[in-house]
Length: 482
Ligand code: ADP
Ligand code: ZN
Ligand code: MG
Image 1 (cartoon, rainbow, N blue to C red):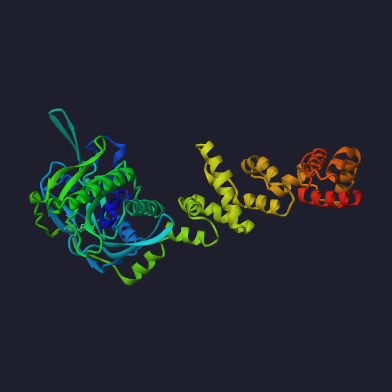
Image 2 (image 1 turned 30 degrees about the horizontal axis):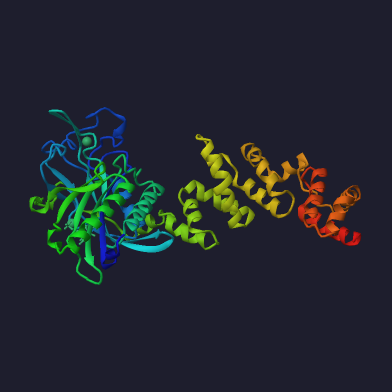
């Protein structure tokens, strides 16, 4: 960044579509699991837009939309309605989309996101339901249309212009993706179009309250591309400001050209369409009661950012807490380990270290086949001095894969550390007697000689002697020897 970037501030707001994970489509009974099938296999008069076919709102989609709204801190509207948004495009068979215009199901939310370890909040303006369009494939002079996706349920959410950096945007999107998966609302894969994002971005001189003219970048399909496109677009707009050409920043749609590494004009606002919104005559308004809202709220689990903050409170770094909170399976495992050994730091170290590397090396592995209690016990018996950390690492895999209680395992295999002082004293005395030359070195001030003596004891006990007890005994005996 050049010095002059400090004179300007970038402002961003997002419009995000999430494809809801329902069994059937938004307004008909066609299957919503359409990616498994051949083109145009899941269509009916409703989703193919036949005149006179009657839509019925999918209660599962309404439920998931509301759940998503609540997870984003929105309030639910007691009454909301559907509206027709008319436009013509070959992938939209009815010639209109059923969406929600002025009375969306959810509004006024706020989402907590941890950005580079710092807690931030971003406002959600609204969330509404609508149906998706079909898919066009262009090949030479022909175009093919597949309406399988037409009528799939989408939740569209709009944020406030609360973002100031590309990192804030990508952190928000990652958090949203985690939430959608955690609550089983959407698969939220950006590459597969399950989560699609339009990014609005403008620039203004620092200190100016009025927002600058925004540019919209549509259908960004990866976090990385969003960051790259934003960095480019912000720099482009700042440059225009610096050259006194800020009037050349036009309200337009630009696309990200990944090969060229720049944004390119797609559509200017002059060509913007009038959608002629009007209330959908074929669908009754949606209503929800206080009791229903109350019940729904209980279904929202602890969200990743809340989890991260809670885990950090037990002394874990943000980077570690972030990974521990990234998947429910990992969080639950970590918490069960900690429950057993009551040592958050060591639990985190073992889960992020040994457990994660085991998981990375075994692709079919599921954490549910490991017992977190056994790992907790393993940590406890290191703490109690029964085994060394080194032995623990050695037996970890065998204990976990065979589901054996480590305390029993250590006892049966005789792997416990030698902590019996009497026994160790005998060994130490023997070592001193047999290594008079090393003892002399030590008494002449050669500090390293001490380590050599410890090494001898370890060799005799095959590494099982408790090192701190050995140190103590050797020091005591050597003091007498002097
Ligand atoms: P439009 O009427 O063009 O659809 P909206 O006011 O509905 O614009 O906002 C659409 C999205 O753009 C929202 O996410 C909003 O936060 C964001 N937005 C609005 N104005 C700006 C701006 N000047 N700079 C950046 N983002 C903006
Ligand atoms: Zn259908
Ligand atoms: Mg708008």
